[in-house]
Length: 559
Image (cartoon, rainbow, N blue to C red; front, side, top):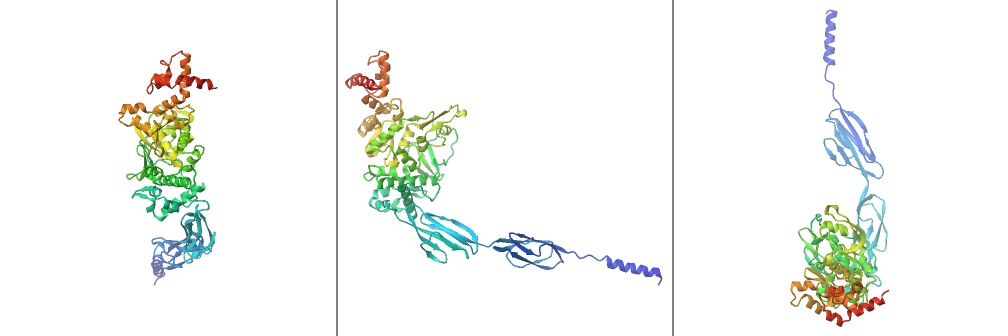
């Protein structure tokens, strides 16, 4: 073989062996989530088909919860994890805190800290404290796995395993708080008048579930003590409207969310019972009939459940007028200096305050309600008390008034206001209608007003005679507004009580008219005094009552 032949053979052999296919290796990327380490770490390469063991090592207080593997998703907490290298793979070791859940609840009424369910480090200790609601006391704890524990507050819980703990509160009438349960048992008429209307229907107190009974006792204890409940934040006042009326919608009803309606009603019931049992007013609800008790204690007299929306509706026609209730604590403070020796004097004192009210302008469209009370619904009682400006509304060509004034939605608004306010001192108020107007009615005393606007009309606004002087009895009401009166006759008598009170007392309004009449040299028959009252009086009857002589006497006595 020649030297050339040998060289060619060797070259061919080299080419045959050197051109064989190179073996592909796969990469494994290992990372961690949380606190711990994994091995092998980072990026490594492995032969096809190789099985690689990946080990996770958590830091103290952490656990290996599992792995995230490409192509397989979440994998359980095997350690080590076997990974077969059929392709490039990535693995993440997921470390989580070594924690166990603690669930804290309450039986009865009170607060716990912490509350609810939350994880805590395994082996650690958690202090759990409890604060009873007014009228309740902590009698012990129920701890899952340990049974009942008593006498400790706070308690220290070792979190070596998941724990369920319940603070056990029991009701105990505080010192000086009358026993409501015993009182209601002895006054079944009142107990049966305490009615809540739920979506399932109306249910009176004797048929309530124990937890609902307990909730009333909690509210009652808070009303007696004068302290707000620690169980929940203070209610919003006024409560947010549950239905949004467009600006140009007329408002004939106002809607509250169910949670706000029930809380408002329950607070009013608790307040009324506290007023009765603690003797905060000189009268009692005990003699009241079923209708009067319902006005004070039956939720259907405050609002009605509205099934299509699940909200509660205040109707001008069915619920005593146009007013959204305010928290009883607020209204009770407002009424503190107005409670008299009896209901009539108290009503009169409130009427005197109402002389400072102002009739709203325009009609009750949503935009106008916002302008007057900054509320898209019936006037909130609290805002009538506090006073509001009237906001300008350029879209409706309405000028504003920055003065803070006690604005009311007319006679229907004042009837609703009186009902809302006097409920807090256990005086029932309803309304009757005459000539399209609302007339407040005080059924416990058989008294009426001749018009909801009576306290602040032109004749009454600056008067000094007692407010109760514009109240009329049932016989007078019947003569003026029933007893065969036609619509025109009833309408003519709307507001009549103020005119008659002005004549009886030779009031300020008539005194001012008389001054002008004297200056103009007018006789009695031509006088503006006679013109202002002639709808109800003849000249002869006024002369017989010595009206002009009494006006002269009052004017001479005035400064």
